[in-house]
Image 1 (cartoon, rainbow, N blue to C red):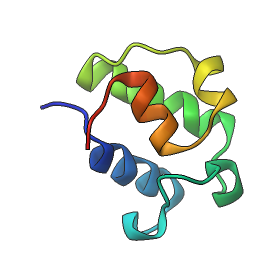
Image 2 (image 1 turned 90 degrees about the horizontal axis):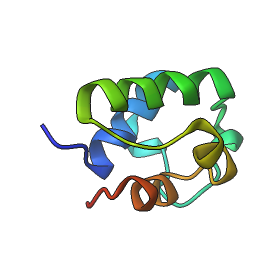
Image 3 (image 1 turned 90 degrees about the vertical axis):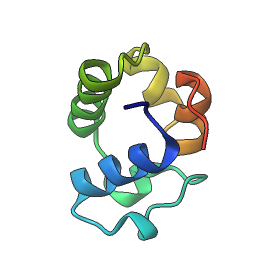
Length: 76
């Protein structure tokens, strides 16, 4: 199964205990409660399940789903 923007959004929502519809794709996820531990856990899940190739520092610099999707080569 390929990693999609909606899968990423659902995973972030799950990590935050929120509804995916409440997670914006274009805003800073730190403002929604995402912390470094959760970013690392998400990245590890995406590496394991989808072969994502990125490092924590790169994702931490731009903590928004649309930025992560671009970095990971994910399409909607």
